Length: 434
Image (tube, rainbow, N blue to C red; front, side, top):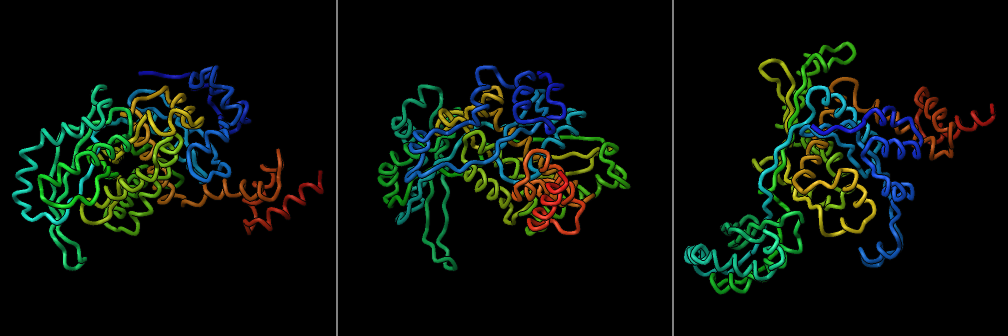
């Protein structure tokens, strides 16, 4: 097992930002030559921003924080998260601290295989076309790899094809489609450009074989061949909350999990909570959070109904056991990862993980986030933690500074009404007494 000096991170949330950076350095997560970048607030220069998108006129910042206490496969992590939503980082850290005492999170990652799609229409003889595609699989793979030889030299590239046939549907007025999946090993890259280049390169050959018309060739963000699973286990006595016994809390969490499995209205919100954690790490690491969202929600619907992505069950000895599986085609090279200061800092703080380890970290954070949300819902309610942070936001919006923020937010939490007008009134009262 690999451990950091976590004592340096004690009461991290109570420290000033400069003190947090120093503690992070002393703990072993932040190397000295990276400290200045963090002190400069991960500044994104105008030149870099202008090269990333079209019509750039400024940068839109998000808070960048750390979820602490994570023990994942025996290794300590302080996980960077970029998010605007209050309580997300606190919830992830709280769950990680609780599960840490019982072994933390264990993960498993499948072989990282990405999928490219060629969609073909107007195929005169689908049965014959499928036979020809299968007979020419080696040639198809070869043409794909010739389009991107550099990935092949590094040990990756196209490896196999899979053919899907979708019949015409009168209800939706869709024609017959013949779809060729190309399975591609993209190594440390998410690989969108690699895949798209390969798919477009093989379209003429696919048209020749099928006598059909190629509609498009592009990657699929439904990465069913790139799955990451996290699991955790905790004795029910550790779940005791207020007047509720550990058994009570365990059973309520299990019941909530079942509700999200069967009811899509609950499942959507259940999964949104998971993605609160997932998206924040994906964004911080410079990866495509929209792709992860689309793939995750498609995976939640694989049974034909939208269901919970995670499951919580009682083990035979009474422990609570959680598990989460997600398609996570993330990369550690390519795109903005190599030049965006926030993405570079994230990979540094995570000790420059390879793509598989990054998948493991992300899915573990998703499971931790899910646990905290469900436990809060079935015990004290979700609003308690939210309202504490909401009070601070209102205090800041009212103009509170320094010690005024804590004083105003505390009075807000004790007030009958929690809104900006009340925050303004309370701040004025505090300043009159000074």
